Length: 450
Image 1 (cartoon, helix red, strand yellow):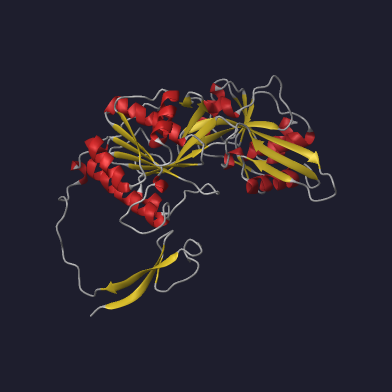
Image 2 (tube, one colour):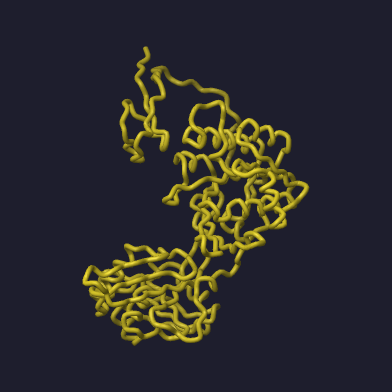
């Protein structure tokens, strides 16, 4: 006997329910639960079937077809874990105008020159518009093929004709599959297109890069299942008024998922920046109040970053303002409280503004000590000593804790010419040319500085 009941499924996250609900209990999205028909529940057992390949000892599995192939762009290869893996599917997401299409066009050009035919399919721009961009950045090559399509069947026909080693689809939300219902760019269409292209990529051992849209909150648009279908998820971040672009891997089946690549965008395209520390630190002849330099870790790369603070008398008799740019507002609020309670710096009746330099986002606890010093320096209107970096996590009781990768952080500070580092106790040996100032708590740190 078989029992059947109506089934409902969320188009955003795939949550299944026996009855319809207005709001998905899993992803909290309104109106996304839809009926998918009656589902039969067979009670018979499943028998063994044919297998695609015989199971072998893991040591005998060949790796030749899974080796990463460098793209020729060192910063992009760093994020991917060495390069593009044949048969892998990548999802690159970012805000409009941030430079995704320009960077991927350069990647396609490098791959075409080194590994053979490459196909770029544009669903948002005409072929002539993409050609103009390719001329501007010098990305013209006989093995680089270009097409403008919005139908999945047409895209697959181009793949059959060109036989590319790399397919770039810009973007996945603009391509529709006539085999499934749903609006263009909707969850059903995006899932169907991504699934079909993933299957083709693995069957042909063809690397595929999908460009995805983002929501106003910066999250990847479409169902969460889209991120599960792909092997690598890369986010492309940057502010419109800044030339700096940061590429991060939030998911990577073939390498580290916390690496960062730095690029500068200009008239000649997107250019990698192998030593980006100078972009995040202000160059000035003399120290100024409210500024402190720290060393953050982005994956395995230490980066010098400067944080700035401004403390001003609150006007108007209302609540004091707290404004933050490039930093975690909740962590800044905690640092303000610790600086006032444990460091003896009065901030209750003052406006406090904090920001990072160069548009970089700093979220790790290793920057706590530098933030506290910058706020205290701004409140006292007294600058910190020249050539100083501060590394350490600040606790609610005012203690300063050690952080991971201290040795690499100190080595980077010494390489950049800094002469002193304010660090927690037992932070290890000091690199040549760098003097360590070890402090147990915030009060001792303030006493050593002023």
